[in-house]
Amino acid sequence: MSIPWYHKTSIYQIYPRSFYDTNGDGIGDLKGIIQKLDYLHELGFETLWISPFFSSPQADTGYDISSYTDIAPEYGSMDDTQQLIEEVHQRGMKIVFDMVMNHTSIEHPWFKESCSSQDNPKADWYIWRDKPNNWQSMTGGNGWHYSAERRQYFWSSFLPFQPDLNYRNPEVKKTMFDTVRFWLNKGVDGFRLDIFNVIYKDAEFRDNPFSFKLLPTEDDPSGFFQEAKYNLNQPESFEFAKELRSVCDEFGEKILLGEVSGDRSIIRKFLGDDINNGLGLVFDFEMLSFQFSADYFRKLIERIEAHFPDPFMPVYVFSNHDRHRSIHRLGDDLRKAKLLAMLQLTVRGVPCMYYGEEIGMTDLKQPFGSALDPIPHKFKLIPRFIFDLLGLLINRDEVRTPMQWDEAKNAGFSSAEKTWLPVHGNYREINVEKENQDKASLLNTIRGLMRIRNQETSLQEGSQEILNGLPNGALGYKRKSADESLIILLNFDGLEKEIQIEFSECIFTLSSRDTAKEKAIRLNGFGGVILRE
Image (cartoon, helix red, strand yellow):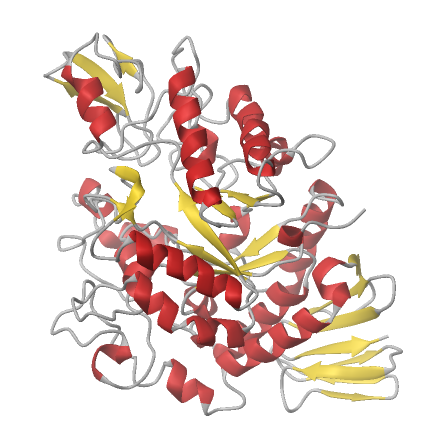
């Protein structure tokens, strides 16, 4: 049985507002992505996931959509979108759009009509109640909001200006499936699905039980002293994943990549119980809070393999537009960043890398009071140091700053006097042009790893076996396909390690001090090797 392309692929996330600005307005645009496609192709990633660029008031930078089939003018036009799709395909790459199916903007014509009365044609397109229950939103606080015009409360899972659609209304489901078909007809290769596990809520609107849990975690979305029993991860949402898969199957093999909060048993329900007939892939966000140690990653891999054996495939992601950049957790240590990338690009799973990670872009701390991100304003009375102590990113602006291309004005991102978010002050040290010229840079390390990944079948679709008996601080695993077998050895310790192992050829070393002779492998601190067995 052949493996679907999306289980073998590699994904690069583009936040279009911050990628490249071609018209000098300080905002990245679709033509900017087109201009940088050769860079992305040469980097080696096959699939581009583009965060939302549909029509939107931009209250949540595009995740509040006012039209699913129109393009926000600051990003470009439908012609630009079609050109982007075609040029991606001309390079043998795939393109994935961000589909926000759960909610719209309050500025969407559907909501305006629904809000106008209790008996209009779209009165039941959103979730309305005369009296709210006790449900909390995912960002904390009451998720019910009163409409004086309609004299009822509407439900918002995320932020108050993002009302949830009512998928128990067959018209809503049909319209959203037709929206998916609209973009598939234009050649899109699939979708990343925003907060997909909140699509359905309890039909009886039962109150959520009390919980002692204060803050949600990646594997348990309950928090704010409430168990999220009736507003998240409902059985109908698992079935909806299969229905959406059937819609996409009308167009061939398309990727559905879900954002889901919950433990791995929940993730598995969105993928399918026995066969992968739901979403093709789901992020496993526990690893966004990774610990940099061989022991942590060994246990992580073992747990993931237990939950997602063939024909399922895990996703390895260490940062995104909502979480700290991965190097933040590494103390800005480039040696550790290279090792983390080596694991991500060689372990069994689909790697997903956020823009700028390939050059080691860092968080830019910014005041909550001036944030464009609406979430910090919900927590403005809480001192920032508390969130920092908890390791929580509240102001997402800090990880969405403009891509650092070179040492020119605004890091080569834009010619504007003012960019939509400030450029990080370290752009003269951290940028694509500078790292291009350094053979040992993080950028060139990732390029080298991607070349090997794209050449070696075992790294794309091979089985995986953890190696035992290695020195403390070392992690090793074997990747096997029908015609080849590779051994990956990683040293998560700053001290040198020596490992005795049989191999025929060393095809990659992470450090110039990593050596492989006969049966002896010497790994430098934070070093790594790929060996052909």
